[in-house]
Length: 406
Image (tube, rainbow, N blue to C red; front, top):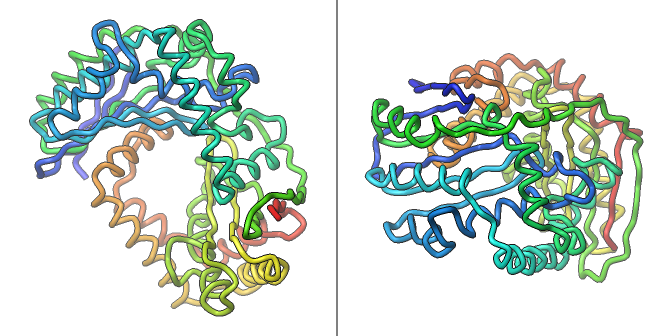
């Protein structure tokens, strides 16, 4: 992969991958998310993401929303526990329009008081929509259970009470404390020449000056398994079970990805899908997930089922975890598991918007980018013995926490 990399004096980094095609994608990723909030700021990182679209020194909200939409493009943003991203997709000839707009809303937003009050209602409605969706809500509740009284455990949206407390001063204080140009990456994929990218990158980002932000405190996590049942007015029982897992820089992370995919990844032939859905018909939605963060991670299994099948479904899930702890994968099984992951990886590289964001996050977190060949080599290097060691570490029954909605 032939990538263009650059770094400005203010610390903002660039990664660009030139590919043929009519459509281009670009984005700015900032190493700030909901885990960087104080208790009174709960939800403010996500609220700021909304407010970035509400006006700059030279644009009203309508002009921001129309700038790319008028030429068939799309502007979007998202907030996670650890990052905020503003990104766009558009025809390649509109690249300058997109990069200028992203720079403008990231660094020149004015956060009008009237818009702040209006957006509070919008975000509260977003919170309410999650409360109406137990299959989504249970993931947030589970992380709050696992990371009790920790910023990383709090849900990204905040609460109606915390959102109502936000003001322009709180927004600006959070930005000054956390939005550091040393922790920003501009990423781009499209048929744009290196010369043009460099010129536009310097034009729209070189003069950015940010205050020195507080560095995120990485920590060691104290974890005690816990089980909880909540009475909910739902047709199904919802169950999530899991444990802490490896962080982004742990060498065992690749093996954890492999195990997660074998157990309940996106493939219809995952073990949980075959045992819970195909063989027994106990569940429609069943999955496992592994989310690594900078200093910790979380593994979980989720399924929704009728109350009469709840205990049987939990027993089946635990049986599948035991199989991975006690039975080493054979050569053919391991090869199939690796090929499946490599196939997903190759398909992901063909999704150029996803690739753009992936390149940006890799540079942000690791300050380097592995090629697809490098990643495949890392996958191939994982052994069956390593997988069984990882399974015994993460899937040990005494370490599993459980949350049930009844």
